[in-house]
Image 1 (cartoon, rainbow, N blue to C red):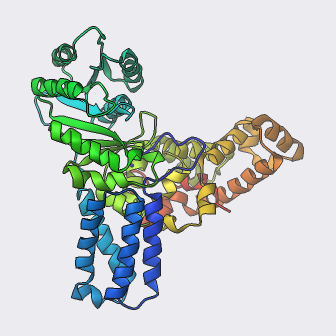
Image 2 (cartoon, rainbow, N blue to C red):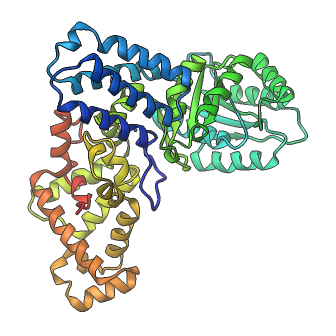
Amino acid sequence: MESHRANFACHTVTFMFDNLSERLLKVVKNLRGQGRLTETNIQDALRDVRMALLEADVALAVVKTFINQVRERAIGQEVMLSLSPGQVLIKIVHEELVKLMGEANEELNLKAQPPAVVLMAGLQGSGKTTSVAKLARWLKERQRRKVMVVSCDVYRPAAIQQLQTLAGEVGAEFFPSDPAQAPLAIATAALEQARRQFMDVLLIDTAGRLHVDDAMMAEIKELQAALEPVETLFVVDSMTGQDAANTAHAFNEALPLTGVILTKTDGDARGGAALSIRAITGKPIKFLGVGEKTAALEPFHPERVASRILGMGDVLSLVEELEQKVDREKAQKLAEKVVKGKGFDLEDFREQLEQMLNMGGLSSLLEKLPGMGELPQAMKDQANDKQVKRLVAIINSMTPKERKFPHTINGSRKRRIATGSGTQVQEVNRLLKQFTQAQKMMKKGGFAKLMQGLQGRLPGGLGGLGGLGGGLPPMQ
């Protein structure tokens, strides 16, 4: 996943299902000491699962259906004879979560005569304009598509300017529009221009609504009918919980929606919207917005999300992030340098830390590793990007010679480095200690070794990433 997640400055990343994950892991832990699943312990466990889902703000009707399906499977003869009730229940819950969220990732349907038109709808403040830019960037970088964006929000001139700025940032073609024009005239002109410029995709940003407003709904219906978009995506704020699912349902009644983009998931620890939307609307969540920056968009994979909820990690997304974001050339040079015995210095260490931040930070990496959900909260709190950035600042305050020969850093040099980076001498000492541990990890294969243990092997060309693990500051 860009996750990247690209925008986790100075705080621990909130996984969308942190609270639910914690509660479900406790349910499993309680079953571990019991020999078999009985009707009694199934009822107790399901009561806890039900409460966990309700606290996560999952719609009541969805919770009832989910619990009934899990109960029906859990009291089956095969399960009752199992010797590991916790494992069996977690398997059932995992499979039912995947089913609830839509089985598999549903990709954008762009199989149309270019340009494929994608209409974006949503309430005001849901992050719609930013999502247009994020999707444009994703289509350019991941699918190598030529993308044009246009704003039909004639009620907010600032929205048109915002999209123009974001289009410049992501390298998408921007079609200018004016508040004096009619939305349909803007969209039609944009489509003609997109055809002339041989664009692959035209993304249309529509006016936001404070609620399901009849006049504005009529306007977007007119756009829908005239443009016949291949995708009509509803953008909704995940932090509104059940309301997100209900609003998506209301829009789905009025428009032929093809999917949902769930935004602001990095600030939502409950996840009720993600678990309710598919069941209530019948429409798939296609993307998650996981931060404010334009790179912070992830395809929604129900099976991977379910694994993360249940503490199984998400190694596939982690490997995909490595494929997308790690600079292979630099990684290869570093691997060759270490193999030749030239050592791993503080310049290399800084580069590894910066690559980790580029992948969404330490928290984003850790949450995708199996078993991390069971780490004590104190340890999780230490895994934040503020700490990583302080390490980078300390290294930046060193001279090139000090970075190359860390053993030359004596007491007076440490004081100078601490002053220059706005830190304490103790922090400089801690960095040097962590660097020494990173050197040892490099010699043993570091992150590549870890990934090989998890995945069996790294996909094409990633075997030289041994140093990335060296950049993970140990949690003490």
